[in-house]
Image 1 (cartoon, helix red, strand yellow):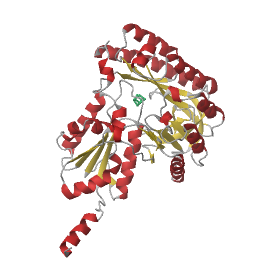
Image 2: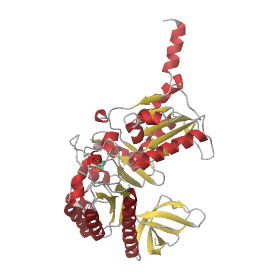
Image 3: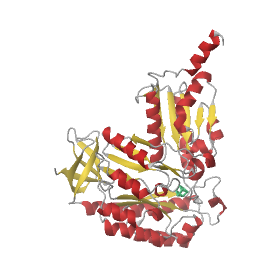
Length: 453
Ligand code: SF4
């Protein structure tokens, strides 16, 4: 080898130094995406990048997209175009579910430099090295059935909460959903490694961890582990005072888990997020969901019996294919009769490649939004009732931030009620008790509190 070749090879193998380069992150969609963006941020900061301040021009933008609905795709496209227009010199990296499902469409957006699928996103630094050498556009995705890797991560979220990714992917193939195509088959972390991540977060000052995944209750089915065992092990981690499970399918939220949370768990809080999607058994079958309305009601009643103070959030899709007028009426009556706290309502969105597109009984767009409106009103009423019932209770609050333009601060109770209270110096990221005194009429879905400790 000549000395010139030697120098060239040495240069190619050197890790480029990105010290001082500024990067701006944009995340759309679910908590899992937020957790993964944080992981990308940490990896890039280890390579010398720093997060751009809001007033700075970034050298690179990383956009972590969602594709759960057509609106999510649209939001992704318009965000990317805005970034390209605003910072034409910046390197634009796009990843996430939209990039995985429609890589050609994304790389066709003028100004996009790097497009990475779900399997590639956490290897961004490798792709950046390639980009630095060649400055030729990169597009790399793995077919969803071949996505097998799992990389655990426990990252600080945007406020005081941390997110621990315990599972990824999904095998359920609900007929309206593209997530199994975007994120691949279900796969889980290793319990010992996840506990180590929680210990590390506790060492870094974490007080609250949210367990994230695509279908969390499936944890362990691929690698012989067990979800309840994971919860019990995490519960023992000193320093972590609160855990929440981000969202769990009703058929996987077993009575055994609920009984353990109610009577034995130290830190798993009484807060549940359970997707229902429809209150009609026929529509649930059309959706290929793995439960019916009586199982769902049983779960809600079990939670209420064991944990009467629990916050129960429920996802519902309005105007899904197959939802006839009479199915809708039955559904809305059923949903209204459930003793839940809040509904997260989404209008049905046609997704290319899904089986739902073969179904009849298409609900017109205007009617979908009318149904969203009706469900949203029910949700507001339920949420208000829950807040009113909390008045007079003493609850522990994890304080998140000072409310700008006021001398108050905002935080969440153990059972997920947002509280405003007089600001206390040094209280952010600490847990203190409050007496809930009323509804905060200046802020949505917030109660007022007096310090009670
Ligand atoms: S459970 Fe159904 S809706 Fe949820 S990610 Fe899996 S396929 Fe999609």
